[in-house]
View (spheres, helix red, strand yellow):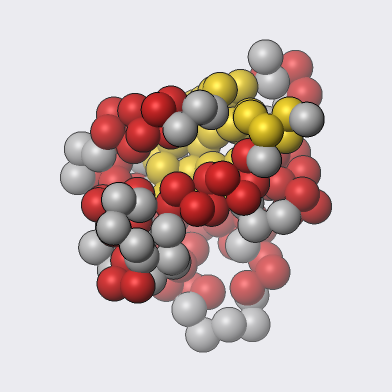
Length: 138
């Protein structure tokens, strides 16, 4: 059964010129890009998106980072999309990510970790709806 997930190629990966390589890995893994948009977001938009982390000590630096430059917002689709993208991304901390994962290849640090992906169906539904209107999903 096809499943949709949400992903962001983060500002660090965009700044470092890794977008094409990351998209190629996503394509090679069998994902279909349902929607994609390059955008610069505001700190306020980042705060709304990451509201679940509002009480964590890294919230301010995370939202500053996400608003620091252009990023790519994406909706991806395939069977087991959420779990498969999480596996492809690797551990949040690139130092702990397995060889061959996106974060191992392209991330510099725990915060500047190249890519975001939804962690559950409910999260994916919220995240997709936060950034994309229904008519944008092809």
